Length: 134
Image: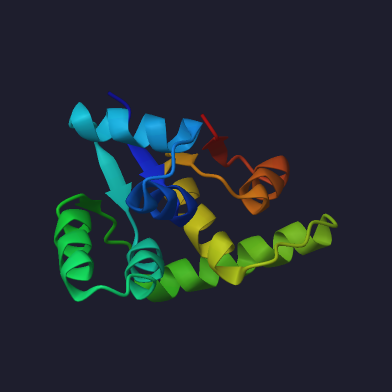
């Protein structure tokens, strides 16, 4: 099984019980114990949006049980900034800086990024980023 990296957009929909091609795929991966990876920025984005304390703790425990990227954070920030700059030089503007950081994790790991965010399609158009919406 090839490992996969799942973006915040998919996780948030999954926690909300929204049925989509992405959440269906995530549910299948989770059921099959598929190797799923998570980055600190994804963990932060998910957890900061959960209001209920019990749900927050359950989500935190579940997410921290996934495979954790341990890349050096300052190197990742620098590489993500360079990714943003490279895309801008190509005429591609990414709306959210965190998306470049998330994409950089996927690029560095050579992993497919499962997402539901048009910024990742833009990033993929100017880089070797492998993405999937299904």
